[in-house]
Length: 509
Image (cartoon, rainbow, N blue to C red; front, side, top):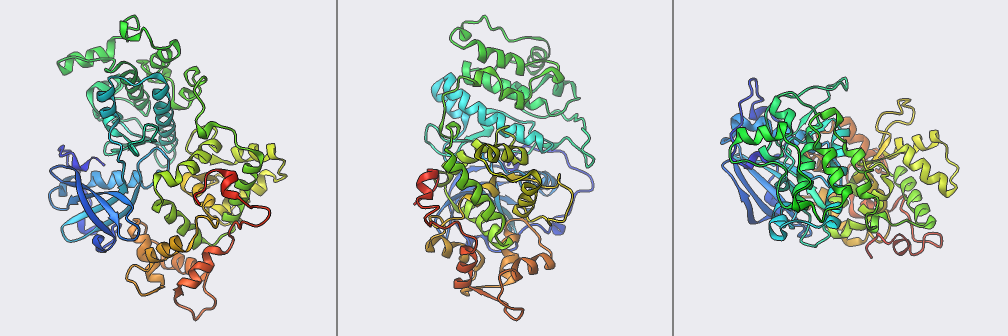
């Protein structure tokens, strides 16, 4: 999030007063996290490593001083609004939001692998094989972002982090401080005119002051050029000279720096750095480009067996039939697991997301199930996904949330015994029972959602809670009842599903 950069932003008239903001949990963050070393700081706040008191998992916690950036706080709210809508394996995630008398605190994914820029500086340039892995993830993330009607507007190597220090660690797109929705409530495209971004990665139409989401594809072309050549496609000592080159010059592929770069890579750069936005290749089309055709298969591209697919489909059905509170608890579990613990689960998701748009559609599932010989019709699958997403099956609007999101998909895959052991169940129970009463109330559930920035109505809370109560008089859930809830509709390791973890090769023992 860009609020710690210290850059001054214009004041928006009619901004929301800090005292009016209801989304933040007024709970003591130090009850849940231990603060560690400083990762970065600016005039408005700091970013520190934070460790969960339950299991010591590391997070990045951004702390912003309330009154130092009173006039610019609407930018933080806008960024939070965008980030909390997003759910993609290569986009940074915000988990929880807190406030106290002096500060706002945002709990986010911790990426220990450093910036893409740092790796470029260390290695001079990145080889084509590694560049393909990075760019495929970037195109997928921005393709998803654009499908959500959002433009990033500040894509650059500094805003791309590696999840860990491992060479093949996944990347995460960060800093959505300049991001903006380009579709209105009626899904009509809205033009943008603010001159934003980092000059050497800015598209010519941003300089002209009239643009849309295609500005991101230009920036991705600049990033690909930097990865392969070690420098940006256009540079100059003065801003006006740089802007003139961006608007009027073309990349010179006859330079010696391109001698060992493939024709396919140069063609993709050329298609991304097209001056006319409407003629520029989109992220979706870029993922189909010839440059990626000969890409060395990674684990998520390797074909799953029919037996593995069948078990995944059954896991999806089992999750769909689970209680609403159990589904929410499984999503909390995903947030508690480390990158390594879910890396193979992510690979399964990527293998199902055929069009790389960040969600799994009915059509994608139908194709897989048809190949497996499942006899479910499209209508039956629609009903399953409605239950999966807690939508009333009688709702005839099949366009409403009839896709499976990233976190929900992973949540379905962990609905088995190897993940839901006693230790994890206890940690999940204590996530709700934060004041150590050894039971959970409706108020505990409300506070848990509040920490995630979600304000649930009383009726929705009662609906969540009442599904698992044994009678109307019961007001609390103890640990045994919590375990029973989590073990209901569990994909059991019986004869049919024996060695599920080994067969899927994506579950931790």
